[in-house]
Image 1 (cartoon, rainbow, N blue to C red):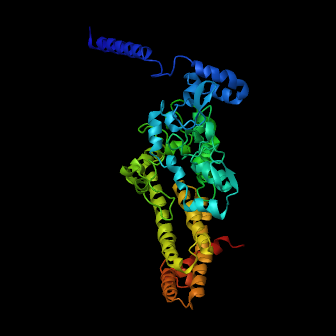
Image 2: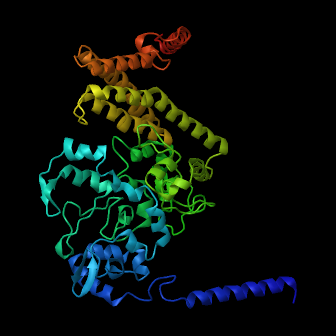
Image 3: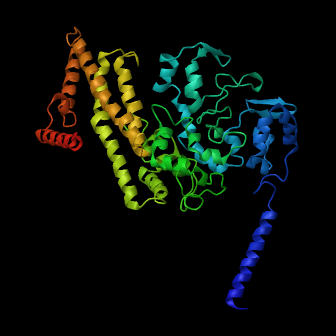
Length: 487
């Protein structure tokens, strides 16, 4: 037998061996149960009339084709706090990541290590104080909250970040905490998160999860408008024009192999490339965490939250994202983009965020200690939490309008027209205080304001712009006027 024939014979034997191994696999090892279970058949028999849409959605899902049904997902242990007897079966309404992990262990493990799964840790934060106290009251009284809870929190914050689901007698769920598909929901079984936040039940469509709108439930609005930024970017424009070419429902969805028309949120943050697998930890391709007043590296944020990502530095994460970018762009293009992005972060930090934080620290002893009881609290909060974030997120996703007019322009306008004047007003109000400590604090505040305004970044504001720069500005303005003057 010649060498080529031996190779062909070996390949044939190998293929038959592998095929036999798959056929001989225990039920569920590869394709799920051999048939739909009797318990699920009972569920369907009733729910096809009681909830026909849910039954139809499940029937169109991959779960149905794998013989995974109602009981397989909703079955509960006798000790589960949210379990109840339902026509002889022990079930729970909530399907948690722990339940999903019975089949999707890798995905759940990655998700549990992500910031997404810890979204509910916002509870008790400055953001939550706004919705609980400043916006809200305790008029919403439920069995789980006999002292009342803010309806603004229940209908707003918790629906994105997730609530701590409270279980009442008989497995019923408290109406203040359910329904809830917040990404960081705290479940009765101790798990964090909600897979259905992205994989909407009961079809669990991968096509829907890959659509940018799927992320827009939470990632939009004045403080983190990623959806709007994406839609104005060249990436979003390409997606809108070419959605029909995106192959969104394909089983294998690898950039450059299964689609090339545009990237989506999933493409950049989660999905596979020819050299990188799918990840459910959306922080593994992010090199700046732009949530705080001053951006930090993601591994620092992960360490504060006790996440395993503390061991993955920003350079590795950036390389992960570059791997995505390089499927469509040249290396120089990608490197230059990151130079632009990092420069915007540095501008925001050095010109506004750092001086702003220092000034806020100095003014604190001169104002009410109650958060948001002072005008200056709102001014500073919106500068970093809304406008500063928009600028940074805009730059990160190549959205020029959000970087400039919704971002840096708003930061600068409110820094100069609201923040500095309010600081000066507070200093004047306390200038003649009989409290020696306050008088000393006023001196420190006024000195810092003077230092900031006389710095190179801000001296234009007090008419001290460098003469050479002033001349260049005037020349540029004259050239503009000459260019567009009427004949």
